[in-house]
Length: 173
Ligand SMILES: [Zn+2]
Image: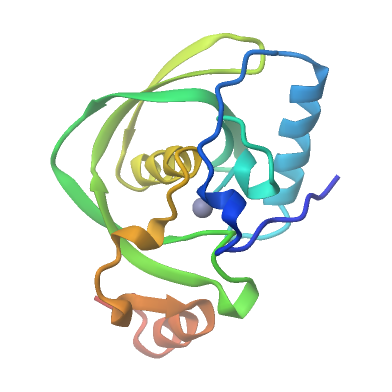
């Protein structure tokens, strides 16, 4: 089932999500529905439960051609060294009007999380994937990526970004 995605500035997106304690059929169904929802657009590389109105610490993340889910994630190591990557969010604009910006985050992190079978996983992430994990965990704490953008001139609409790339064959600096 495709779920409706809340759009900023909907107040629900600012809520702090609660840890998951029930690893049941309902959770598996929610994960399957979130993956189905994420698959509706190429722009979706991650989706947090709060974005579909459910305040639980759960996200689905696109990893190559497959989708993983992370439950109650904790960042147990941060490199301190940062990198800038382009980020967008399914809750910040739709289609041509979706907003993107370069965001600075830790380049390397180690995350510990659970799966729907209550199995513990520790994963090291670098670069763009590290950004996705940090972006998703931010959602669980009620934070939207735009909070890191100090200059509004650095916020781009999807259609303007695509036109720029078509014209110059490179992303804006
Ligand atoms: Zn997001």
